[in-house]
Length: 197
Image (tube, rainbow, N blue to C red; front, side):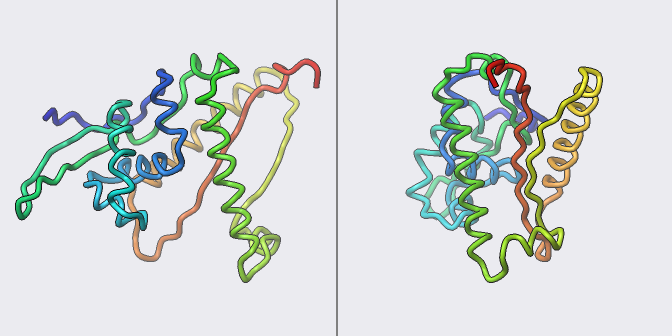
């Protein structure tokens, strides 16, 4: 097996790659394999899932070229397969975004928004009201429509890309026992593509 290093970023350019990530469980599996080289059983333990539920998802991610088999090891008569993501960060390429009618992209967007909505509902149904959590600066929920010239837009786009890169680097440092997990969903796109609105 080829021992190629994990790339810093991977741009999704194929429809099959996007389809592979349109499933929320596959996205969670990929997140785990971005952090470490693991067997399917180890990923299942980390996610609180049964390994049998993950095998075909891991195969789909491997077929799409998003993860690779790094090595195998014999353990008590069983062959353990270790996988790792091909990169630490994944982005959707402009060609896939340009079509507008792509079912896979729509599914992926729906999956991300559904997951975010479900997590916010779970936060809101907790012991402490969501408004209080946000007031305490524990979390942030915001909606902004920006009006600016192209120079300002370009500057803000660069700042947002740097922020995502910084957060990705922070996530790669690993998880300690006292560390908390946060999620950021960022959607930043030109509204002037929709002239009727």
